[in-house]
Image (cartoon, rainbow over all chains, first blue to last red; front, side, top):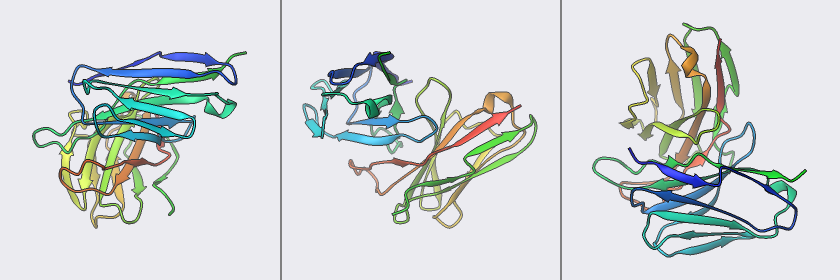
Length: 114
Length: 117
């Protein structure tokens, strides 16, 4: 089945640092989404990407839809403490009888450096 | 806009018991999805509805699982004869979409955490 490889699995940030994470797929997707999930809560949408090469920003967050349609990255600039949490990429493809339900990566856990 | 609402937030049950979860989607959304999330993993798709019709089911949805959306509004997910492996967070999402519509954003509820003892 389709799988998303998300990296890194975890990272520690110091306030003010820039953060970068990415997802790669063995299959082509026609939509990439980035979600953030806090403990005990559901995922919250951060950015949605619909076209290859698209670069979209949401405040300090920037994400890009890779040209090959098999990858995407998310950057967070000037991180702040409330950025901690788990970030998930999710891809969607329309095929056959499927309406393109989301396939999620395993997440990147962002923590604050002690 | 009250968002996607799920009830209960937590459920503890004994192995072999039946459990039922409820999801109330965003009011104008015609699509409703169920996902399961285990520790350290991303959500995995279980099933989805367009209005009252259940249009797709994952292989993860065993015969012990059944989902309904009788009036095209709220949905229930029932697990019969629960097993310890059913312990997970069950997430509901809703969206406004039609066939082939690209911008079909799914908004998630806070989930129901199930613990099977």
